[in-house]
Length: 366
Image (cartoon, rainbow, N blue to C red; front, side):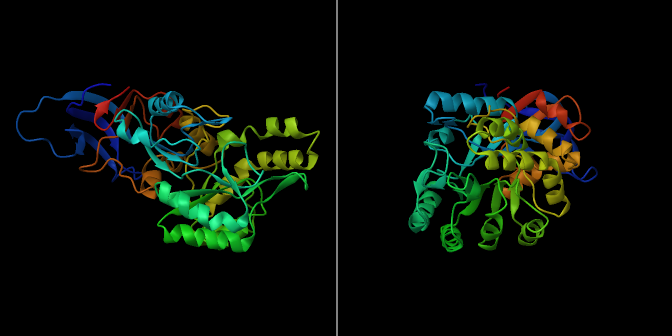
């Protein structure tokens, strides 16, 4: 890891989405912190030039997890380093069976906001991922994970019901109402994995704060999300796998397979309609299950492909995402977590795939 130094950063510093008010020509990093005031007196600095964004946010990522469950520390470290080198410096870990709190002591690894371990219905989720429980125990487990996490709890809102042969809601309405109320009492927000349509109204009316994937949004539920301010994290790079999953399950669960294909086919329309209605949309890759880490640039490009304006897609992984998670961006006195690019990412978000420099806690780490 490089030593911390003092830096003079020149070019176009993008502190927010406003093309007039939120662009600076220069800033400095002194003792690991950002300042927009020229330091007084002699100060040896290293010059860095380019287009500057706050460290990117992956708001749905699983460090410490692979397709089979928890992984060891060495694998978790590789996952975190892969995300870091792609410019992701803030992760909302949307459920992990591994204890990754040791990462907080590493100054060369991204900051992580944890949601604890997934909470799922018995035999209604990926093996080795979740606490698998019944509704009577939901409140107790939500309180436990709220106290273990960093202000979030993750529920599995729907999954395939083998008796029905299709996606179905996992929890009765009264259970989710009590569970979400308990999480809020503990000072935690609640999010839920949801592919299908059926669970969404109950979760939103029960007070949920966010829904992951949200492929089941409809004309009936989009206004409800917008009215309540419930955010979504579409994970479009994950939704792209639905046809392959459907093909694998076609023979055994044809209804489920057809449903997954329909959700995939309308994915861009769903996300665009959500954005147009004013629903907060954030970038998340769902890395760490069966997906590779380091896909944040691809997810931003997918949001643009869905019809979200490029600056709004950038905000979903930078300024807006950091504010949503309660973390600073490029602000006076903030620790210097930033990414430098050769060209303007507002003009072409594909620029995000090739960071020129990555600075974490005031150190150039890439």
